[in-house]
Length: 272
Ligand SMILES: C[S@@+](CC[C@H](N)C(=O)[O-])C[C@H]1O[C@@H](n2cnc3c(N)ncnc32)[C@H](O)[C@@H]1O
Image 1 (cartoon, rainbow, N blue to C red):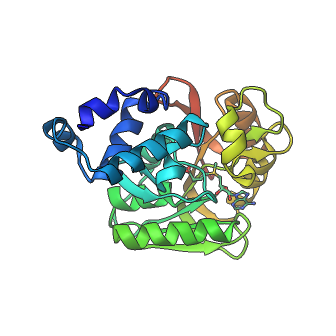
Image 2: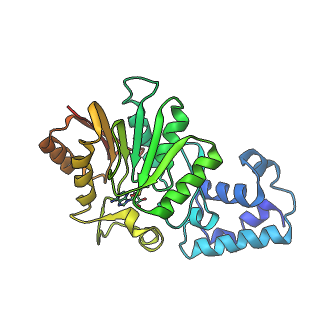
């Protein structure tokens, strides 16, 4: 059986992969980048390759995310190792990296910290875009920190990771980035696969999803130099709550930015 025949077989089609999921599966299982996937479409696959692809398709059909099955996801052009202890980084979060990249008063020696780092996606993307910044990151979950370290080593990016609750024990920074858990417990819009497979600690937060955001807005003021920025990802319906909380706490120049789908997703604010 050739790759093109396999891809139209009933068992593979039942997985309902998106184009990018299919590309990732083939890349990881057959070691073929996109152009080779086209060039090799008529070559015969081995029994072992067919079996592997069929097994992945069967797991996908049950709802398991491809990133967890393969242990891999792509974010901002980086290939990241992903375990079941971390959130799968979303393309929308690249908006946060872009907004944060616009908050750099100087290119050299800036100290940047990513809280709630999970797989390290934001911190590693930032370091990759801005090699002259000093980048560190933290997460409360030690398995997430282990995953982030693995990614830093395999990508050869010099980012320091530590396990801690928000800013506990951390110093002062010029820029803080954060994609904290912000989904309300019981939110009916949460996809079944997220509910079933992604870590609860990474997804949900109390007080309508705003509990950790409120702590973060409060604590970040003690860990940014005057004029420093906080760039925060939040739910697309939380921008107003974030704006009100931030203004009450004394943050300045508060501005919300939209994600790839045009929804309010990232708010940047400055410490007076
Ligand atoms: C939405 S995930 C974001 C992961 C990653 N930054 C990304 O964008 O893909 C939130 C992360 O916050 C971490 N977290 C939850 N509560 C925390 C706390 N109190 N302090 C630090 N990290 C926390 C979770 O372990 C999880 O890795």
